[in-house]
Image 1 (cartoon, rainbow, N blue to C red):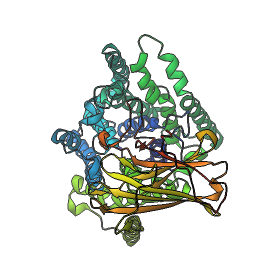
Image 2 (cartoon, rainbow, N blue to C red):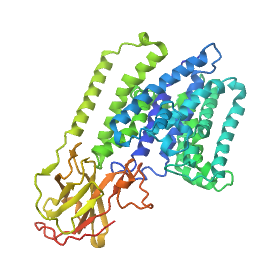
Image 3 (cartoon, one colour):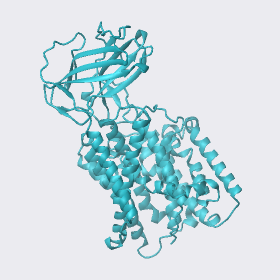
Image 4 (tube, one colour):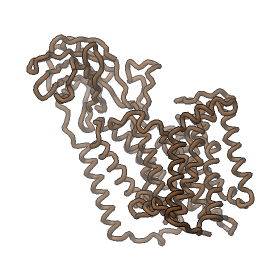
Length: 559
C-alpha cells in the first residue's frame, strides 16, 4: 500500500480553501458582494472533492488485505471527526444566540448525515460549512467498494456516477423544487449539497489517480515541458471558471438540464475537468510552479487549511456580530490573523494528536518539539491578547437621569428593544459629530449598529457607514439611558448636504420579528449583506457653516 505524500497538492488545498474564504467574505470588510466576479469561488469545494478522490486512490490503490477496510474507515474518522466536533463546540460557545438546540439537527451534525436532508435549516445547521464534511463522509464510506477492481471497472463507475448526477437533476426538475429555500426542500440542497449529486467529482479524482499512477508518476520531462503543461492547465482553469455562469446558463436551456443541472454545472460541472488537469500536472511536479508549491511555507498552510476551512465561517459570524463592522484592510487583516492563528492551534492541539491517538493509540503520540511548543504558546498568547482586545473596548456612556424632553423627530422606538430619545448632528472643522441618546425598553445585550447615511441634494446616497453601538460586550437594564458619539471625518463629507441615521443589526439567524420594517421583498442575504435596517430613519440637513449646529430636523424614512 503506497504512502507517498505529494507536497504540491497539499499546498493547493490552501488556495482552494482561500477561495471559499473569499467567497464568504463578500459583503464584509468593504468588499463588494460581487468581489472577484464572475468567478464562482464556491467551486473550491468541488476542487476538494476531486482532490480527495485522487489522494485516496493514490494512497490506497486497493483494500483487499484483511482488516484493510476497517483501518481505512478508522483513519478517515480520525482525520475529520475530532476537528469537526471541536469546531461544532466552538460554534456553540461563540455564537449561542444562533444555536437552536434541536436534538435531531444536533444528532445529524454529530453523525455527519445533515447533507442528506435537502433543507437549508438542516444542512446549514450549526457550523454551516460542515455540510461538505458530511458529503465527504459518504465518499469515505463508499471508497472501499469503489476502489475494488477499479482498474477494470473505472469506466462503469465513472459513467454511473455521472448518470446519478443527471438523475438527481431530473428529480429536482420533475418535482419543480424552488432553486433556493430557507426552510423547505430546494434544488440547492439537492444538487449542491447532497452526496449523490457530488460523487462524480470524487470518482473523477479516483480515475485521475489511476491514470497518474500508470502513465505519469515516474515519467520525467524537461522543465520547459513542465512549464508548458502548467501554463495550459492554468489557462483552462481560468477560462472555465471565468465563463462558468455563461456556460451553465446556456446549457440550462436544454430540457434535460434546466435549473437542476444548472446548479451542478455552475458549482462543479463546468470547471471540474480543469480541476482534474491541474491536480494531475501539479502532482507530476515537473514545472516551476509545482516546485514553488513544494516549499515548506506553502505546505504548512495546506496542512492547516482544513482547520481554517471549518473555522472561517463561524469566526466571520463572530467577528461581524460582535465587534467589527468597520471596513477596510485593517479589520480584514485582523480577521485573517485570527483565522490563521486559531487554525494552527486546532491543527496542532486537536487534528494531529487526536488522529494519532485514534489510529495508533496514546503511546504513539510523539512529544512535540520545543519549536512546536513555542509556536503553540505564541499562538495561544496571540489569541488571548486578541480576545482581550475585543472585550476591552470603551464602555457605554450612560446617563444617570434623563430629563430633557424628546427632540423633534427623534422620538422613535425600534422594536421592543431601544428608543431614540435625542439626536444631534453638528458640522465642525474636523467633520460631522453625531450625538445620539437611547433608552433601553428591556434588559438586553447591545449588539446593534448605527447606520449613518451621508446624503447629497434630493437625498441621493453618497456613502453608508455602520458604527457599532457598543465597543464591547455590554448588557443594559430596562430603562437605562446611554449615549453614542460618532465622528464622520471631514474628508468624507464632500457633496454631503444631510445625514440620516437609524438602528441596524447584523442579520445572522436573528428572529425576523425583531427586524422591524422588513417586507418580504427585502431579500437581505446573511452570507453577503449582513445588515438589516430597522424602520425609522431620521434625516437632518447640515448647516453650511462649519461651526453651526444642525437645524430643521426631518422625521421621514429615507430608505
